[in-house]
Length: 345
Image 1: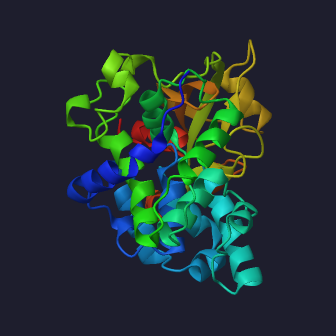
Image 2: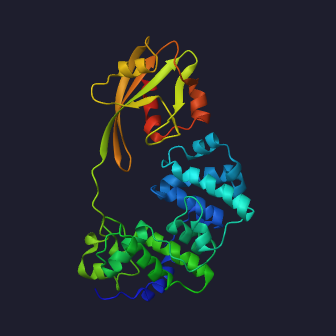
Image 3: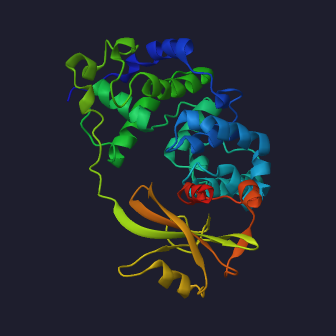
């Protein structure tokens, strides 16, 4: 494969970015804290879905000090619906370190940034380049897609050596000006999001179309080369929306995915288990089933086939809350919050 000269891309890409960049809330006053929060939220989540969460989060926790001191349930409630809750938990761990070790100031070096919980090479690169104007590449899915099409690189994006190659190669072509470093990182993100899309890229609008090998050869659909996906493990899950005179039962998950988060009491069923068996195992023998509904929830490696069952009983071995309390104060992962719909029937 003939080496592609990435020095060709900054000038046309920066010119295009200045004319076409979206107005996004985290691009206003890009401090390290604001960049960090946005980048963590944007992992595995669409930009449009993040906007409202980001604005609410920043209004409630405007500084790293506020994040470090936030009560956990309040923090999880702010994150409710974004998923991947380990992200926000790691954010708080990192915030406490920044407050205690760095007096509330984000470290400036890439190495110190990557030493913080939940901050890998991509997030550190984003903070270093966008907030500090350093020539450090941040390689995400958009960057993999743009770069692999530019040079028709057949390396699977799951190959760690490919990430290191792109981080090194792109960092070497960064502008010398700090403000342009920030813009260059965001320009590649923006090109991948708006033009160099996974399906049906708008190559005729691309500022790099004249030098893109995939565009010249019509091979855009072949890049990037994705890893072969393993089939998801399927689990049958019973979820119980238990109504008592005191309210609706909620508990903390003690194991499995979403461990440590709130749930309607649930159980991953083994062959032959019935809802009655499960409830009896919790010491519940007198109850009335009101209705049930089936849901499906998909995690990265697991698919839950969920049977949500609404029951009424006089007592249950779990804490109970009113609907208003749940809606206002109790964070529920999407997998369980969707079971709230059964209460409307």
